[in-house]
Length: 377
Ligand SMILES: Cc1cc2nc3c(=O)[nH]c(=O)nc-3n(C[C@H](O)[C@H](O)[C@H](O)COP(=O)(O)OP(=O)(O)OC[C@H]3O[C@@H](n4cnc5c(N)ncnc54)[C@H](O)[C@@H]3O)c2cc1C
Image 1 (cartoon, rainbow, N blue to C red):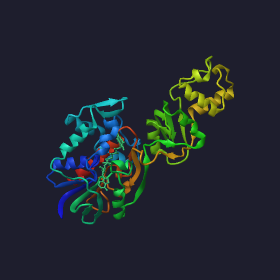
Image 2: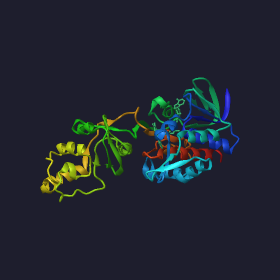
Image 3: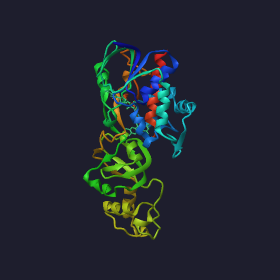
Image 4: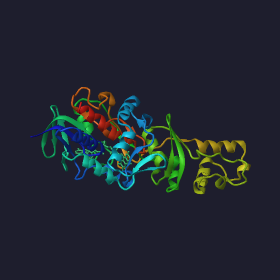
């Protein structure tokens, strides 16, 4: 049986960041086990092939998870550290919409940097992780490995086509760690029949705010054949569990009730949207200055606070991430299992999930570095 100091389960963003740190800062014998023929397949497709790897404003308010815990990890390796890490390795990056850090050329640039960091690390490909036993003994579809330290970096369950499995939660369960089941997040939302009018607007997008619980998200909303999607819906889906959410279709403007224009042309929204919307509000398309008080109130209430309960989500196959994972109360501030010394969980397998916009890679990198530093203490 081969023996390693550290075996990392999963060759994705967090696994590679952890392996790279250990390889560059120690002489530990490190191995990564990856089920796919190629590593980092989510990095490859992320951000439309340009990987949105961090955000201008990273803090725990953009994550679903224990805020104090998330803050500690993010503060230990913050977005500036991530930027500096990649800048020193000559990554060409760009900021989009004043918020999102993307690779200027291709996600391959990040993958190549992380692969270079991992020279000296043994990488086993096409090998399914089956179990981890006390000691630690890692069983894969091809062999058994012995390790002093195991880092579970196997991600969550969305996009099975890219290699995702629930093995991380199965391993956690076998060590009696409590976990929240994975469920789709950063995903489009399906509609109840009373909102099917939105499906007919498939292809139209508008700038909107969605309020869900205490969270207010503001970005573009896209009407889709299956329901609603777009950046604002995906981020809202992170906080939506069941029940109502509300949409402000006109967050940046006031309606001019002195205008002689009809509603469908006098409000700065697509005419096709307004025509359908008026039917839903049971209002006639008439000049804005001819609306009585009650009609104006109905119009404003629906435009700024259209409240409904989505039917569900577009599902795991379409979700960028999963909510849920190993509960942070089971882990030390260094991502180590409190009751199992040498067993770590990092990245998306932990019950911390970010909004859309680079937050999830930032979490993957921060948790990987915090864990690796602790291993070298
Ligand atoms: C289409 C898409 C676009 C995205 N875009 C962005 C973006 O632009 N910005 C952002 O911040 N986030 C984005 N994300 C989310 C981001 O990719 C993940 O949050 C991040 O990759 C998590 O890193 P990780 O290392 O925890 O897990 P992963 O990157 O998922 O890595 C886990 C690895 O473990 C392997 N594995 C799993 N089970 C087994 C097993 N049983 N045996 C062997 N190997 C196994 C997997 O094949 C995988 O390689 C996107 C996700 C998707 C699906």
